[in-house]
Amino acid sequence: MIINENLPFKLYYENVDSFGRVMANNISDVDVNAYNKLCSKEYSWEEYTIYGNSPKLLSTFYKAYGKTKKLLTTNINDENLIYLCESFEPSCYFNDFIKNLKPTTFQKIKNNEMIVVFNWCGEALYDDTFNSIIVSQFEENGLNPDLIFVLTSANNIKNTSKVNYISDHFFLQNSANSLRLFLTQKKARNMNNEFDWNSEIVNYDVFTKNKSKHFISLNRQVSRPHRYGYGLFLEKNNLWDKGYFSFLHMIEDVKQCYETLSMQDFNSYGEFHNSFKSKIPMHIDTKYLKNKTNLHAFRVSEIYYKPAYEDSVVNIVTETTFTNNRVFISEKTFHPIINLQPFIMISSNGHLAELRRLGFKTFDGFIDESYDMEENSQKRFKMICDEIIRLSEMDIEELNKLYLSYKEVYIHNRQHLLKFTNYDYFNNCLQKIKNICSLQEKKLL
Image (cartoon, rainbow, N blue to C red; front, side, top):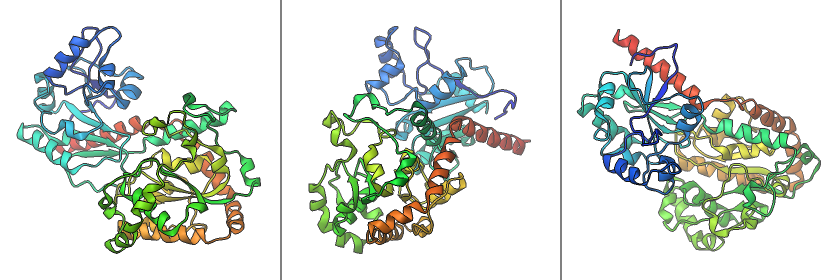
């Protein structure tokens, strides 16, 4: 694609309703007609998708870049056009992506005058099935797969497809601004009254307090294999009294933890499934959630039950992914940083290394962090569990002294996070896209 380096990218939308508002891209004529029957001054495409009528959205890229910066267009003759596709699921583009393109859009892509961007910025997405299907659709219809880009927060991925994956850290800026608000508002936040307590982060006076618990580890869904295996580990070793632990939802298929546990470990842990399950839900911060039926939906990114953070030493974070070579730094990673704590990351290999690359400090010497570079998931999980056992056997007074010896690291990490308040995920990704397009253009020359 020929890029005008002096002009920004514009998000091109091919569907417009009767009020002049854009609709999501790549929707079928059936969806267009169904929406038009409901469309009104108050009812836009965004309302249409809120009620589950279509999986194709006007979402984060549209709002943060196109709408905010006024870089939306319906003019197919503009330069530097992006055909943006936003959805929660890649599968909604598996079958009819080409069919749903307007003829003018199809021709623009065929002429290498428009790129196609799929936005999964808030996910740790790398999908071999999607890659294969979308590339096949392009090649079968004479389109260049070099024009396909995916925005993801999965970093360090090993991309073996023709799709261009653009990786960055979507949650950095959000977490930095959350911290900034907590520090500048000088008051607690009630999080829309979801709880009967106010959300607060710890202050520097935490360094004057003795903590009674070794750990804090707040988990929502137990549906991810590494969280399930971790719960079985805690149950087997009866570590519940050592920390503040929460697990809110349970899975039924115990086979899901094969990714995390070796067959030998699985056999020794499996007998603890029922006893672990009987404890769920285990509440810490959600104990005072006003609507207990809302456990699936409440926001977690800015919820801090201060007493639990003040009274615990090491934060054990179960990140979204445990898969190899897919480092995903979500808001969960920043909870201990915001609350002045050391951390163990039950996450993909290279997670701590990526944090250090971003300028944060970790806790080698306090915590054995050798697990971070272990590519075998089952071995990495066992190394993490062994380290949790070691720390759990330490006298709590000894652990408090060790905690205080890393005071400068906690302060550095919190202050360093504030440097990312102006971090711009989408601009970073677009610059990477420009660089790739420029290289492709030079190759053609």
